[in-house]
Image 1: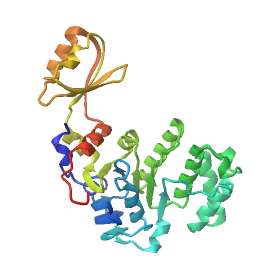
Image 2: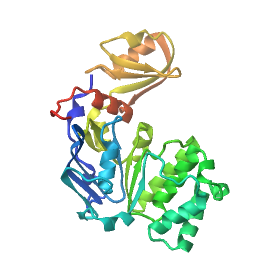
Image 3: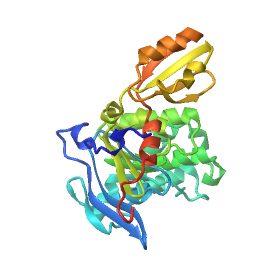
Image 4: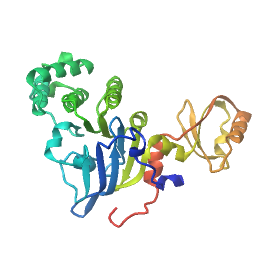
Length: 326
């Protein structure tokens, strides 16, 4: 059963990171429908400079539509959006960096000439675009590929090129839809570090991802959407605190009968090397420890806060207290 906190509206990012600064983005009561399908239903959020904000949810939850409305690709049916303290207008677009989920590259262009093209579209001189492109390609281990056509690159390499194109002009707002798609573990670490550096430099970063582990490591605040409306929103640390420390990670050898004790164990996931136990409501961790150690040899018994993945699953599986079109 999902914790009761799943339905609580917690404070948004505007109360946490850079709380004294004006929001880079404010979305207020925005709705968007495509015919009879309501993609975004009364969504509000605020993103501060110097923060990484995660927009999370299952497929079809309205994430991509929200990103596209924020940067002006599509227009909301109702509600309003402000960026940099003003209503969204065309002049703002050179201050955005956007990485779409789908590939947006010209396959026949060479990598370096493509980046020069993208940089100059955003107002950089040819010399400055070239300097920045070479530096970014070195950072992402693409220097040996700059004279190759985009179509000759792997999906992961193309993703790195697309990311460089999104940040080459040093935008103040960076919007990314599934930025880690196609990246190998080493490239994922590089991108993670780059995003953290950009946030520390004062950029406002909005990302949509299915990778709960990346979101958990990166995001200061999250907005979890399902069927177009907000299920859970706020500072990530506060959200986790609201769910309590109700998980225990156990490594053991021997008798596992303690896992069947329904008074103490609500559910568990066996990962082979260890088991994660979700405590039953009101269960005492010390009682579980005594019971487990009575029949098994324990090498680890750690009380943990719930992962973002568990919170995600609990929140989206909670029965909808829904609106007619949700």
